[in-house]
Image (cartoon, rainbow, N blue to C red; front, side):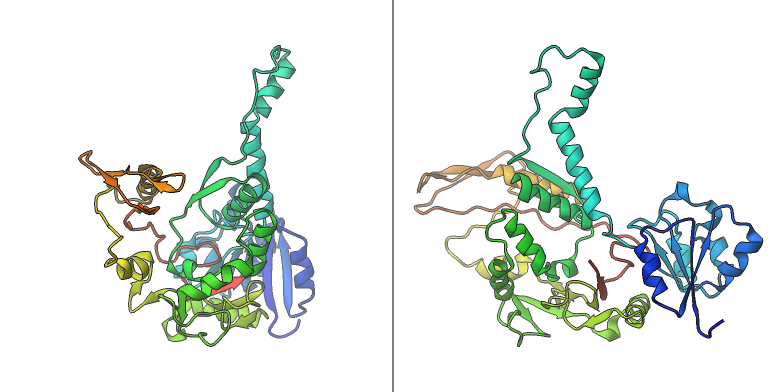
Length: 408
């Protein structure tokens, strides 16, 4: 046996045959396969020598004795990483892995296209009453063809909870195919996510699907205009005079698990990039996550734009203009929707008309009057976001924001 061979094993099956093809090109990696009913005597040498465990995500498809938890990890002194076959990690006890110094990563996004298409199929099945029509036809009880008249989804509003790989793809399809308005909520979006731009090819795809004004050429000037990039202000795709300060986490601030993740990706041949917002940094790269936190303050709309505009004579900011929400993410979403309903149209043709724009907690209303077409905005105050405890796995691989491995 060759020296310094890296040992990887899996049980029963892997998510895609390309995994075997990739491993076959790496002679320094030995891949072993176990079955759910493999005898302990045969499994023990493989488990003991393993550096990596490619584990399935479905509890009912994996024998409980192969779940990555304290008892199994104790028998694997060389184990460095547990990699789940999907976005979930139901077969992995992340706390046990963290305490043992074992990295937990996932493979999120691999089935996003298929799941998003399935979501649309279910949505259309409901809106067109396909299942009800099928049952009626099979029973022979469908005598009136109008009994199961469906409804169109074109131009409707869809609410999406969770803007991960699947949620983003569902939003793209709903906008492009049906011209739907998308509202979304995700408690795990943070300032780092806000500072990481989307991929140029995604913007161009949205534009080709009918999202006028959303091509990369259309949105890039706005990205440049809003930011002051402390690391790459001299680059033509970055700004140097905008209100939002963008910078990257410094290596000395990385948590140990982020450093291990980064170094492991580099060792496996993933290309490093200093700028994840660069034009060539949107697939197959590892880099430091950009963020919009400056001097311990997150530079959101309130800090960067509204504060600077407070002295404008044509701007009025009123507190308690919408019903207060409880301190939860769900209530924050409810407040935002209430805000949108509280603002009624303020213009009739090209002439502004006085209208009620908000109702306070006591039921009092206020009226806006202007000679010009006014703009009114209602917004919910920030609320604490529910975050997973330290050591838990998160979308994209592991807890933390210093490193972002992008693949497509």
